[in-house]
Each structure stands twice: as structure tokens, then as C-alpha cells.
Picture 1 (tube, rainbow, N blue to C red):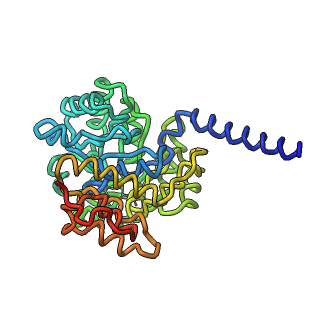
Picture 2 (cartoon, rainbow, N blue to C red):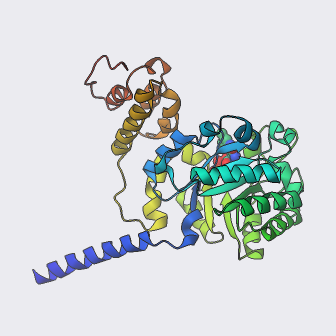
Picture 3 (tube, rainbow, N blue to C red):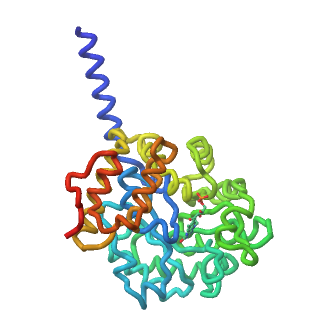
Length: 356
Ligand SMILES: Cc1cc2nc3c(=O)[nH]c(=O)nc-3n(C[C@H](O)[C@H](O)[C@H](O)COP(=O)(O)O)c2cc1C
């Protein structure tokens, strides 16, 4: 009896310690697991959904060009839900003064980080002289980083490739990181494949140039004082833990999007968090309420915002029905609560379910 009570007390104390530990994560854990910036995918609705699954992963916006931000509808690009923190805004640009203005906007809006895109190979982006072609211009990138760092107090980070075109020389990426770090950038997110600037679409550029993780590890060896986050082709826990032996963090793109339920295990697995992992049903219910609030209130249709959760039942029985329902634009005028009931296999409380 006494032994039982002592054991139970010890278990409670250990759980409490876990919580204290999780609440006092070292700063270095901030980039341990990140969800990649993905144009047309990681919009604010997607990030809200991902945040329901992991409280600790760092989330990145889609790339926003300086032109779109300074001359377009800034609020449309910058608005987000408070629940999304920690959240970074990724910028595309190559003009220091403009980037500094955009960084200031991002800080004013409350973003936790400003990230500069030096990895996008698309022709449109090349025409704008930013993205991956900036890897050939480390001094210009350094000027951009310096200007942004002078303008804001949140971290300014850079996401780049390990090289451009067919060259496998290590010198280009080593010198790039060396020069840009001297301008005050201490966190580099490295997509572990070259960007081929001609002849490949952006999609092919995420598949064809081979992944060379060893180049990213070598960067960490040569710049031990910098935070190096690896990206590209990571789809499983064994790969994440393997990379974390060599670098400070792992950024995951497509797998996080297509198989979002993976995120639900990250807090316990990588951050020592002790909160109970949510169930799929709880996440669904929270998303339904989110869609209901955002869309029913504004009288808008919800399918565009439900896209990110199409993968929630990935690999499970009923996944197809789930995907069909939540991507059915013909149901776009129904209250998301009614669609949620159908998705759960229950009948709707309000058969009509139309938004008023
Ligand atoms: C649909 C899509 C859009 C993307 N858009 C961006 C972007 O806006 N900015 C960026 O830096 N990378 C972008 N990427 C690249 C990803 O951030 C990431 O570097 C790449 O997908 C490799 O990681 P993964 O293999 O884990 O997906 C995009 C990738 C995809 C699939």
C-alpha cells in the first residue's frame, strides 16, 4: 500500500519534471523541427491546422515577394492567427532597402522570424533576380541580411541550396554561408540539393538534383557556431533523429503536408512535451470550429481553407471519403459543422446546414 503510494508520487513528480523541462526548452530547440515554406500550401489556414497538431514545430509562411508586400495588399499577405506562433515570414527579394521595409512590416505584425529565400529556382523568381540565383551573389545577400538585421530585432535567417546548376563544388556554399554569416545571419536552412536554374521546373528541382546531406553536415563542421537546419526528402522519424546527430534542426516540407498526422507525435518525441497527444477526432473538431468561425462569420466558402487537412486520415480506412468531402466545392455553401458531421459519419444536426 505504502509502496504503491510512493510509486504513484514518484510517477507524478517525474511527469511534473517533464513539464518543467518542456516549458524551459533551451533557445537552441527553436529550429529543431520546422515545417517548410510552401507556396500555395502553407497559407494561414494550413499553419493553423499544423499548430493544432504540434505546439512546438516552427512554421513558415509561403514566400511573399517584396513587391507584393510593398505595393499590394499587405494585410492579405501578413494576417495570421495568434495561435500560429512561432511563425516565420519568408520574403523573396534582393533589394536591401525594400527587404528592410518588409522585415519591419513583418516585425510589426508580430512574426517571430524573417527568412530570406535564396533557394527558389523558378524562372519568374529568377527574372526578379532573387531566389536561388542569389547564391552566386553572397555579398548582395550579406547586404540584404545586414539591412534587415538593422531594421528588426527578430532573427533574420536564410534558406538556400547547396549549389547552383551542375557544379558539385563545396566552395560556393561554404563561401556563401561564410560571407552571409559575417553580416549577422546565424541560422541557415539548407535544402540539401543543387538548384538547376535552367531546364527544370520548380517541381523537378525538388526531385532531380540528388540529395547530398553530407554537404550540409560539412557546413556544420566548418561553422560550428552557426545554427544549421537541414531540409530535403525527410519522411520518417529515423531520418530526423539521424540528421539531428549532425545538425541543429530538420525542416520538413511535402511529408508534413501530405501526412500531417506525423506532426502530432513531434512534441513528445523531439521536445519532451508531456501534454497528451490530440486525437484525430479532436483535431477535426477544432478545425471545423475554426472553419465555422472564419467562414460562417464572413459568409465565405470554406473549401480553400480545408485543403491542408485533406491528409489528416492519410493511410486510414475512410481516407478517400474524407478527402472527397472536404474538397467538394459543391458543399462550399454548407456550414463546415454540417460537413464535419458528414465526415464523422454522423448525421447533421441541421439537415439544411446552409449558411444564412
Ligand atoms: C508546393 C511547394 C511550394 C514550395 N514553395 C516554397 C517557397 O515558397 N519557399 C521556399 O523556400 N521553398 C518552397 N518550396 C520548397 C520547400 O520549402 C522544401 O525546400 C522542398 O519541398 C524540399 O523539402 P521536402 O523534401 O521536405 O519537401 C516549396 C515546395 C513545394 C512542394
